[in-house]
Length: 377
Image 1 (cartoon, rainbow, N blue to C red):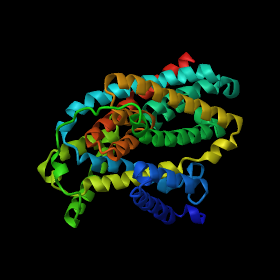
Image 2: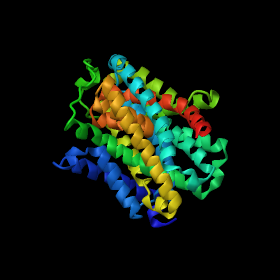
Image 3: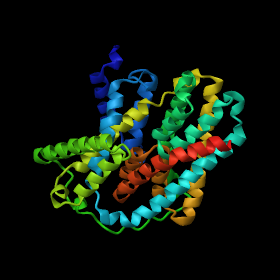
Image 4: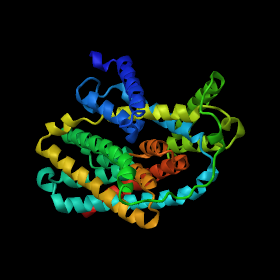
């Protein structure tokens, strides 16, 4: 194991990036971007300079963060959610998410006809089109489901290259969706979907103490254990769905509502997760594939760009809430965890639960849309 693969060193660097992003976000320039975006950018830079491991030489620590930290961060953020605020936000998010799913499918089909990737990728192009449709609808679960069906994981370099391109495009789209509200408001004013309720947690200090931390640690680890246990007994129920349900139920209790610090703890864990997302943005892996890598990058980038254009245009006709549109798009392209990072960055707490739920919806429909595209192209 080399020095940069030492998990203690890597975790130290990830935590350092969060702290640096926090201070940078306090500056006049950094304040325009926010902590979430800066964490991704800072970590992506050092990863591409080989100061920490990236996607091609991933370490178990990264897997642990994806497996444990990301889901538990969602649980903690849900402890700050009151169901009364969800009733009115849920339907718009679902509508926008479904529009985004359609936009992804159309984006793949349009890009296929514009770029003709089959000239470089051959018959594998159809499978890759389906995999990208799946992952840009609901995440990596759909990506791998389609890959396994066609034995694409056996393609070695091409499979790894597709993952590398997906990581790069997903990271770039996080940056873009964070910037969309600021950019669009400069020439096209929006209006927020009216969520007039205030949660009990908003009136409580976000400071924590040892008593609250002890309970939050117990609840977070306990809920994760229960969700994993239930997933083993009933595999049809995704563990994240159980974890989400437990978080929602506990959030409605007076005892948990009075615990201080769940939001801060959850948000910090999300930043650690986003730091790993930044580390996975590995430009060198894409360039090493040469013509194939460029073809994949153009295909994926244009697909996501078309998705964004269609969602913005259609979404503006219905709700014209740039922040909500950005969050719905991120739920498509990046999944529930990155979507709630946007909700927190935009201070739209009422959209945290809808973002998670539509992310789960994406897992359900993404694979079907992926197989549909394989049959159509």
